[in-house]
Length: 249
Figure (cartoon, rainbow, N blue to C red):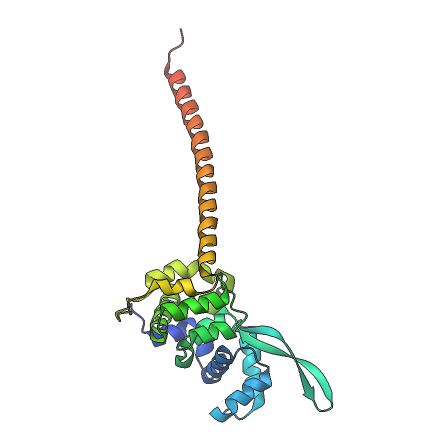
C-alpha cells in the first residue's frame, strides 16, 4: 500500500509527531540554518515566532539530544550575573539533518546547512562538496533531488529512524535509491568543465581513481589466489573420484 509523504514522515520520524512537533521543527530549523548555538540563543532566535518561554526550548533541546537528533558541537563562554561559565553549543546530527529536510526553509538551503553544521561528517571535503553542488545544480534542482532522496530513504527504512543506529544509515543508501520516486522535472544541461575550476577537485578525483585502481588490483590478486586454490581442490577431488571408481587389480 502506498503511503503519502506526510504520513511517511510522521511514521518514520517520531520527533515530528505529537504535541512537540512544532517546537521540535523550530529547533531543528534554527540549528540547520544557523549552525551551533547555545540554548539561550536558540530561544532568542525563536522568540519572535511566539515561543515565549525559555524552559520550553531548553526541554526540546534536551529531548532532541537524548533521542539523537542533536549533539554537543562545542562550548561557549557566557556571563551569568557576575560569573562566567561554559555553555554547550548544539548542532544537528545526521538524524537531525534528515528530520530537518522535511522543513521547506531548510531543504532550499542545503549548501548553507552543510557548511554550518560541523557534526555532519561527509566522505568528501566539505567546501569542495558545497562548491560542486553550487556549480552542478541550481538551488531548485538541489531541492528536488534532496526531497526525492529523503522520500526514498524513509521508504527504505524498516522502522523509524530512532530505532536504527545512525552509523547504519549508510546501509540504506542503495535501497533508498531504489525507493526514490521518479523525478519528472527536467534539469538544466550541465557544463561539467566548470568543475575543473573548483580548487583541488581534479586532484581529489585523481586520488579517488588511484585508490579505486589499487583496491581493484588487490581484489583481482585475491581472486586469482582463490581461483588457483579452488582449481587445485577441484583437481584433487576429481582425481579421488576417479581412483574410487577404478576397480582394484
